Length: 324
Image 1 (tube, rainbow, N blue to C red):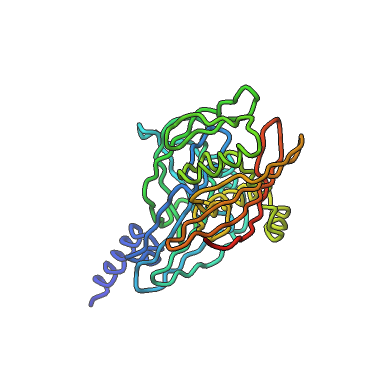
Image 2 (spheres, one colour):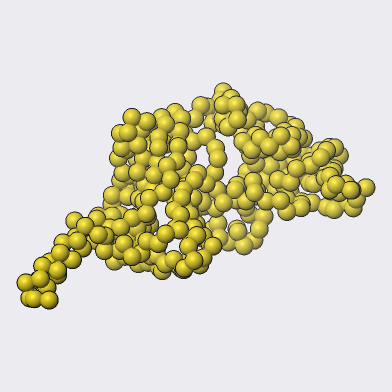
């Protein structure tokens, strides 16, 4: 090959390199990048964190590796748009994290064939969600990090996620914010029920798989303190970390099927004893669980505390009574 043709061959490859992302080799067929709402609930403007679960699944025959920055702003970004395709502004915290001069610390994640890796982010850390409405959210993740500059980094794009933000939460006559029923859209107001009525309300909601009603009178933060390990973590966490712990605990209760937990569905229940004063209460329920060929009996003792004339379940214990 003459020097002339060698020159143009090198030039052509250089030009093509401008249009091919430098990290294109980091992408592999069979890599699935997806997002979903971490907790199915109704979200309000200004109040609730919007936790999104980010998942990278490796459906290829090879191991997939990518870099995950400790400061997530250099690994992931979210694009949120109105139904008329108008983009929402990025959050101020996101802009500050991306633009300040700092060293980027990261770890390399290796996902084996058939495996997946997930983490949870608060959408409010990336997007300015200051107005109610319906939005479409898509995420971009940068396998070799976002480093700024004029060169656009290679990114994987996720599925599109629908998000609805309601106006600020309505408050009841007693000043307590109300909850909304996900299935019906009706307003759920915490009422001044007696301790045994609160427990019965929770159990009936669980039997009907009405999660918003089930959680209405549960103090998840207080229940986290039941486990000494979780309590130590709680005391050591930041405010954002504590929000994530509560969200994780809520999801764990929704997905667990371990016998003896508060979220296992009882076939029937009978109130045995209720005692309370102006501040604390105890309710004992005999609950039956259908196991097919036999029925398991357990005695649940629920501990409640009263705040602003509303009773909340803060703890519980379980005693196995055998079968029938």
